[in-house]
Image (cartoon, rainbow over all chains, first blue to last red; front, side):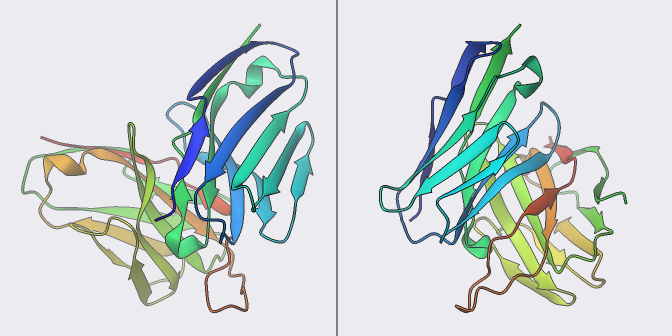
Length: 110
Length: 120
């Protein structure tokens, strides 16, 4: 059974730092991997989607990489800002078997 | 566009009562999903639908039923609520993307704001 792990569970960093969030999965036969952001009491917002044939995706200050062979993905956030404070979740597909990680709660210190 | 909306936002039920959660999307998406989110468990897929009139079970379907009578709406029903169903429920929708491999191709999902349900 696919398992998705996100470490650390929580992270606090000073504003302006670059940081990396980690996501690992046990079954490399994934279709895609997606990174989400969730603000307290809110729904999820899709940040980046990496197809299984891709190695990385970029959007603004965010860059996500995928290494299927090692079962890992990283989300790189450049020049962090207080507004980046949220919980970040990764999820692997296919859709009918989608598995989410439990998330990393990120706090950016002003 | 309103995106994905959920009704109600909050609800308190007594054990054994029934209720229906409504999800609506105005993006003409084929796929719709119901998830529950519990502390320490993450999000888990309850049921999903690949189109009007079709539904399928996800990871944790027991105790729930769903219907997709219209493309834009996806209903989640609890026939006899139990305290274990206390959770935050999220609906999501996505575009239809064929993988060519007979499986659903994961495409960007758009989430609703959630319904917080408490069963006493």
